[in-house]
Length: 256
Ligand SMILES: *[C@@H]1O[C@H](CO)[C@@H](O)[C@H](O)[C@H]1NC(C)=O
Ligand SMILES: *[C@@H]1O[C@H](CO)[C@@H](O)[C@H](O)[C@H]1NC(C)=O
Image 1: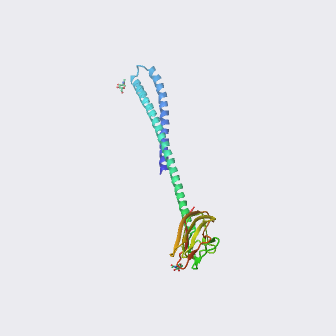
Image 2: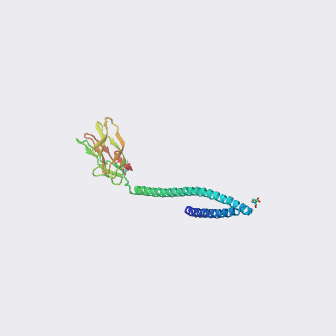
Image 3: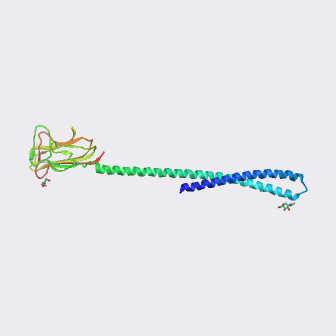
C-alpha cells in the first residue's frame, strides 16, 4: 500500500517536472518572438498603437508566467523535501517491521528453549529412610550412612549401595535430614558432606530416658558430578526402624 502511494507520488512529481520544463521552454521562445516584435514595433512607431499595446500586454503576461515558473520551482522543491521525508519514514517503518520480526522469532526460540528445558531437565528428587534394623554404631571411625529404604528416587541420583547422592547436572539443590536416637548416655548425630567438605555436624548427647532427634536442611550449589552424603561420626550412634525416624531427602530446585 505504502509502496503504491509512493509510486503515484513519484509519477506526479515527474509530471510536474515535465510541465515546468515546458513552461521554461515556452517562456524562452515567447521572449525571443517578443523581441522581434519589439524591433518591428519600433520601426512602426506611431503608426500602430494597438500593436504596441498588445506587445506591452504580452510582456506583462510573460512576466506573470515567469513568476509562475518561479513559484512552481519552489513548490517542487518543497514536494521533493516531502518526498524524501516520506521515503525515510517508509524505511523507518520497514526497519521496525524487520525488528519486530526478529523479536518474534527470538521469543519463539526462547519458548522452544523453555519447552526443551522443561521436558529435558532431569527430574531429581529423593527421600530415603536409613534402615529397619534399629541401631547403627558406635564405630571407631566415620562411616558413610547407606539409606536403604527408598520412598522416592526420581532420576536415581541417590545410590542406596554407596549412600551417595551424585548431582546429574549443575544446579541449586535442597537437602534435609532427620536423625533419631533412643540410646541413653551416647552421642548421636550425622555429618552432611559436600564432596570431601563438611557442610554441618549435627549431634547431641542423649542423657535422658526420652528419645532424641536432630535435623537440618541446606540449599547447596552443586556442579555436575558433585556428591552429597551423610556420615556417622566415630563413636556416635543413629537409630531407625519401621517407623522411618531417620530420613534423608533432597531435590533439584533449579539448574544453573
Ligand atoms: C491599450 O490597452 C488598454 C487596456 O487593455 C486599453 O485601456 C487601451 O485603450 C488600449 N490602447 C489602445 C491604443 O488600444
Ligand atoms: C515406613 O515406610 C514404609 C515404606 O514406605 C511404609 O510401608 C511404612 O508404613 C512406614 N512406617 C510408618 C510407621 O509410617
